[in-house]
Length: 153
Image 1 (cartoon, rainbow, N blue to C red):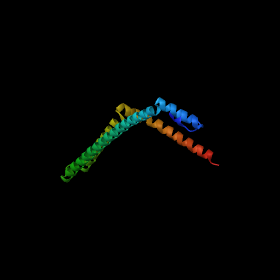
Image 2 (cartoon, rainbow, N blue to C red; image 1 turned 60 degrees about the vertical axis):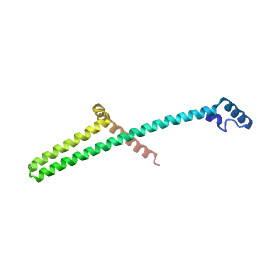
Image 3 (cartoon, helix red, strand yellow; image 1 turned 135 degrees about the horizontal axis):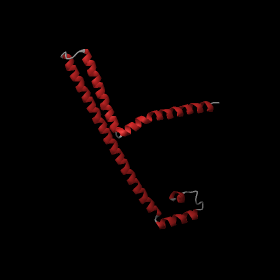
Image 4 (cartoon, one colour; image 1 turned 135 degrees about the vertical axis):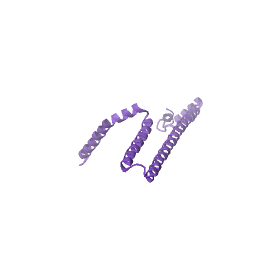
């Protein structure tokens, strides 16, 4: 509303524009506008700061998770190297150990992914929706290709 009142196209007469500005000054519209802008900027700054803090916490958690996974993997690799050097187990035993370590890594990573998605049920809903989302994307891509063929001269 204030932008409309201050627009040059609203009042073409300089005397009418001067009278409007005098009336707005008497009512204190400019002060109200400045106060509103200040409060709006404060709210936006608070929301931006909260978002940045949440992103920083998420980033730190991902770094900790990555370091934990790296240390765990290095520990397992070191233990396997020591056991191999000691002549412990047969090649079939090492194959079984590799399968166990791979399964452990898959469970560890999926557990982190499940917690990131919001829990087991959220993850189940997400995974159940994958085929539907894939079909929707394929249908959209097909429609775009068809429209491109129609639009070509």
